[in-house]
Image 1 (cartoon, one colour):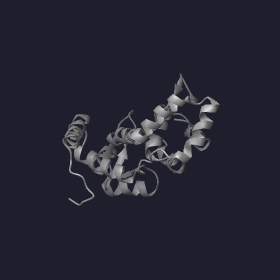
Image 2 (cartoon, helix red, strand yellow; image 1 turned 60 degrees about the vertical axis):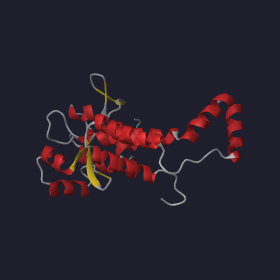
Image 3 (spheres, one colour; image 1 turned 180 degrees about the vertical axis):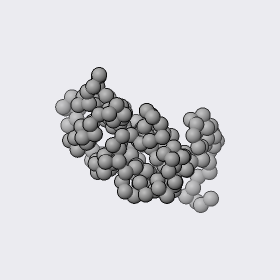
Length: 211
């Protein structure tokens, strides 16, 4: 232990134990999730404590009625504690759990692992490196029938990759879009599975679709 490091407290040890137990209950590959989570945290910007130079901005927001002095102070305390970073971690964990390994996706699609890598290289399939492992978000997989990617996904991937990261793509495909209407407003995933025009999805993506 260096002089800059403080000994682990009992609460820290309990926190590590609870994290391991929580990942076990979450399901999936616990080692993979833990490794990926550590990698994610290492990439996050350090939490910046309140800077007095921000007080003019606070005063302006209070004057506009966006915050009261009390609500701004409460929000600032949450930010200083790491609430925004905690939200990022929660979002990542949820998305990372819904991914498959290279071996799993190859079996699902009835392809060799080299063929899957080729699809990724051609921007026909979305993959993400998590903790040094290639993972495949499940939102891009068809459910009717199984064993395929969503209809027309390969031709949409380039536009998707220009607009969003893999987590945002997943959010988009699970969000009903007003412009995708057929027996009700549909998600992009349901629209494509039901035989909808892929150009309608592309137009939403390139036009700034919501998720």
